[in-house]
Image (tube, rainbow, N blue to C red; front, side, top):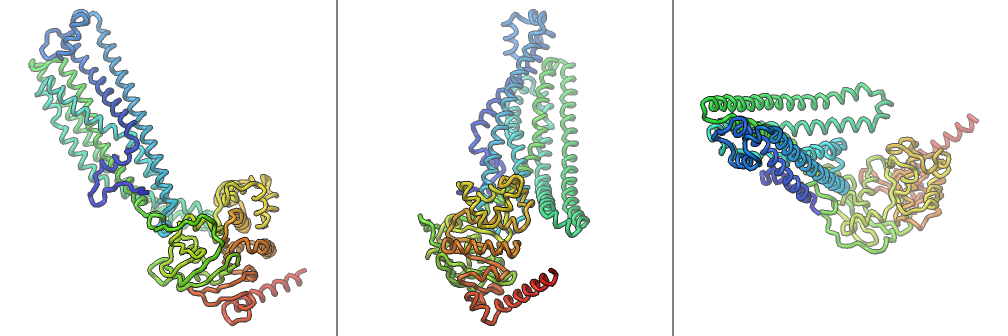
Length: 618
């Protein structure tokens, strides 16, 4: 599926095509809005025309420039004398036309608003769906606050334009096309005088539009940076307080805040430079028409009624012409917003670049093979290089190594968060790059290094692994993860709300809830990325024993720094600087000189020292 909107990069697509593409599936309500706009404008025309005819044929009989159609209507209903005796008739007619015109104006605005809301809902759905499927490389480099601002503020900018201005452009065109001929029929010379400033007003608005569009981009980008700082600070507020960095964060906030204020002020100044001269040009045009019309009326070159109608019609024309400046301004802002959203939508989603050949119907047995796998997060040295190993179905593989050795990267490659640059990863004999990503991920139950929990109940977080799971199954996996007893001690039990990112739980509790979630998925392969680092030794032993009892039900891959977590594994690989430096079982590696034996000796001595201190203290 192509989510991309057309953009104006390279000058290939104009602004009106950008807007036309957005309203593509909502043209019916916009069509109704346009029809209502036409009828509203038509009924509003009659208000000044009735006033003009009443003055010329009723109040000042026999004048020569009256509207022939309205003159005939006056004579049909009894003539000027009858209307003069019942002046409330034209007043009621003017009021009636004004009310009907306002009714159609209401319909126009309502339909335009409904259409714009529908468009922006669809755009939000498209954008959210696209972000869910974007490549990890892009998301790794993006600021969450900036993405959030594009999904909210920029879409709101588009909504406001589509609701308020798209149909108003039609109003301005209708008025210019229909009012000018009427004015010319009434008095050619007065029409020329009354419209002499309009080209200047339109030209001034266009020049302003070209300048303001650049500033809108600066304002949007500075707002995105400000939102990113706020979002990051609120997310890490506990770290800020723990280190007493309030002043530092306030200073850090002040720079993007000042930048946003400065760019917004530049925009405000530019807008003030537009509105003041624009008002002056419009008032000048009205004054010219009033002076010229008064002079012509005094000289007998036109009638009072014609002058009245002219001023009313001129006001109808000048307001939308003046608003064209505002429309062009908001159009510039909308184009910037569309292009910022398009910058996300043109990024390829994961499945767009895949050549998906196979999606096996049955779940995998859990066999994993890596052959010569090499991958780098950047142009620097490879994160992992020439990695090869095999895991048979039901086996447990443990991966050990210092921070930055590439352990988590191997998991990310198995899950196809990234694709390896060299070598291949086989799942049941199939190269995973030839398998559908969703299928690959459905074969893994995962506990990431930093488990993420939603701001929901504990039950909902565990059930995320299997939405159809019953209560009994949820309790069973919670017992396996040694978290059931803890949960039952909460006042709301499994219905306890745990706050954003599970903030009300301890680190160990979050990890055990995440393990429960992964176990509930009942996948052929279980990935545990340092998933027991925050639990105590006793709880760790209980979880390991539970996993041992399920030995053979899952192929299990465990990353850990605590060697006691790895001792039960069928196979252990030791990594350093992106390479495998040792392979074997726990018994073999503790007897073999190398990193594993050194770490085992250090941890054994530390545990013995702690036990002696505990015995002495008791």
